[in-house]
Amino acid sequence: MPGEAMLGGMTVEIGLNAAIVAMIERTPRILVVSEGGDGGRDALPFGPFNPATHRTFETSLRARVEQQTALDLGYIEQLYTFGDRGRQRLANEDRLHMVSVGYLALTRSDAETTVRLSQAGADWREWYVYLPWEDWRHGRPAVLDRVILPALATWERADPASRRSRIRLAFGLDDFPFDEERVLERYELLYEAGLVGEAASDAQGRDTIDAGRRFEPVGQAMRHDHRRIVATAVARLRGKIKYRPVIFELMAPEFTLTDLQGAVEAISGRHLHKQNFRRLVEGAALVEPTGMTTSATGGRPAALFRFRRQILDERPAPGLKLGSR
Image (cartoon, rainbow, N blue to C red; front, side):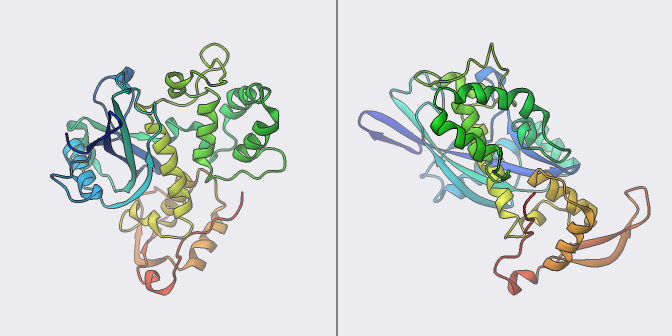
């Protein structure tokens, strides 16, 4: 079989997963596919690596995504290799083990692309549907105080010496600042405590909370460990926009500064002061005016800008350093 190897009587298969991100209506979206099974949960585009057909993981992934979604990927980078046992919920896992290589891909979407994706059985989902505790754009997420922190306080009691510091660091409690890049750490804590639906399949031997009766699972579950891959992708992109101009891979060729601020806020999950943001953009010299304006906002005509590509030759780390909350 493609991408398979035998180790100690077990077949190991290499799979490729893509967390494909687009900015639609100033909201970060993840592309998901539906192939049935696993309770109808959303899944990332995925498939086995076939070395007989493709020389590299990346070319194989691009071909698989185009086959599944009819989408031609732009920017792409490898995230991590996910190989924990139990991650695929396979009934025959004693004989077959799936190791997945996760990727982050950025693209632009328009009405024509959305129709084509729908015909291919794919759709865009807001990524905060899966990670609602990460969206601070309109203030502190209600789910934190309503569900997550009370549940974690209960979970902490079984091992307060080690768990308290982890919770404080991950969620920015007491004297710890909230770090928007610790997305994966927060998801892993919730998984370990049994507060996400995916934990139910791997709860044996874990000191988890009975989330089904005492606390509701938080966020929308995904197939296998795809939500862990999404959390990894969000963390990577939040860090990346601070030192690389990848945000412009998600923007239209021409945009207003309000559009740009909305995109940065959506990715980082935080609200940014308008004047401070504009000073930050001007200081970073990342954009230049086109000389044109737009009235699409319905108010006064707004100046249009574009990414100033010369910055790539001028500075080694041209990004938007947002600072602390």
